[in-house]
Image (tube, rainbow, N blue to C red; front, side, top):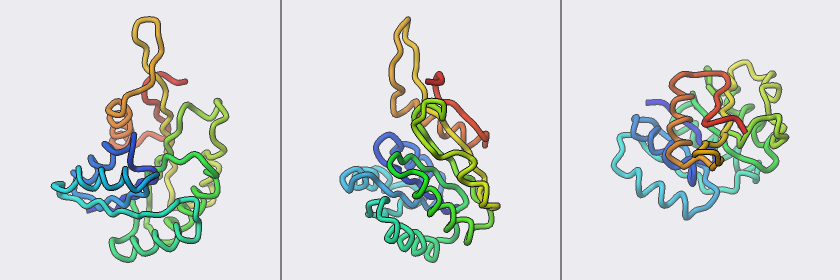
Length: 180
């Protein structure tokens, strides 16, 4: 049983969190809202793994670090992390990476972003993690789908399938759909 961290693990990542829990993992989920976390927790009740809710604002860096340390003490080090956060990303990613790097043997860290770095939507890249020798940085860019001659957003299921494939294949860079 692995200990997995999913930051932003509700909403569009709900299915990914449930997949990881159904694969008999401890899944520490930091949601955007308590309502989304409650829905995820109810949907994952029968899985072999566990959903570990961490009800905090992940932008509260002191509480974030304290809560993650508690989860690690109770369940062991993180060996897989997924993060889909937008605001103040670099600081939050660095706090999480520092903690994981101090305690975990090796952790694959999947950073999920809308589009790619060329869209200017994130300052986080592999450079953010260069000082952390136990972090294996992976990037998943979410694109779009074509239907006829029109672009459309990816569905939650398409996002989940693409992220799960990226985790299984352990690629350093992945694109779900067509690159934006």
